[in-house]
Length: 381
Image (tube, rainbow, N blue to C red; front, side):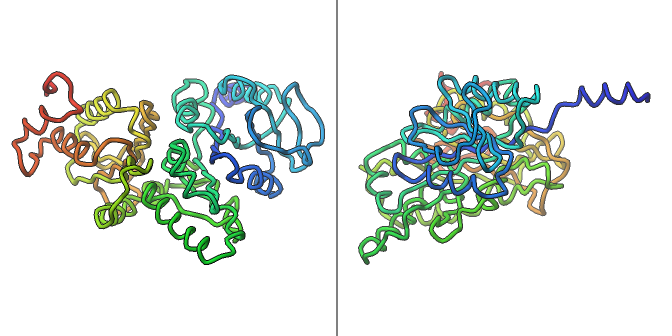
């Protein structure tokens, strides 16, 4: 190949997707403090930070100079831009400036307002055709105030959703728990957060646990790794443990988080690709709003030695990714769910029906046609 041909080929090679981390948490939880601390760490050099114009963020003491209409350069070497409208516009503007060499960055950190539902932001990262090609969702970090977290979860459904979809949960203000009652409240808060989201590690900011190496690279698709750590990303064992815990404790039905369920499904059976697609489509179309987050690794009947990874947030599913090989000795299909107002048995019976496994107390066809997720009395098989 000629030198010119090689250069042209390199130019056509799409760039490595840029990791995108979502930082969320309720009003006053301490996102600003955490973000300021992170941006001073050398690990976040060359990071682009997107903040909402109406957020409570305050980075003035870090600003150095303006480099664009809505963009400033921070002392840490990070760029910071203000989102004044559509998130797609903000992300595309960053890409244009990067491609035109007006700025450089290697990752994006997106801070939401305290009242934000994180799902629409995740939809943008996972569904927009161009952004999907240029960015990859690295993870969701949710900040929770240890002083007021219990009451916030009681009073605000948004805070429950923020905790439920997180990959990492950061507890703030634990150094202010100066009485036995407050310290006991922290333990109750941790128990509640683990029930909401069994797989997300809970990190104590005051103890220095909320460091970049704990918060970043928590997604599946890290190109620096030779093989993805699917087991850590799925954390299916945590869902199984929580299933037992959930049934051993009484939950107040008036609490917002009483509506949240976290569970996993597993099977040794290889699943035909068409069956998997039908199952996911029916789940998404009929109850997508209540499917807060779903992750899985699936053994397909057509190619059982090269599993596929699926990842969904409500109605939106990331394009299926095929792995070159199983990442460990566990070759079962494992699906983990965090749902709202959707019982585990509903999803489990639907899944079993598609696999052709009869429910214990009903014939197979009845399991399929009686399931409330299935419209018009059933599905053609």
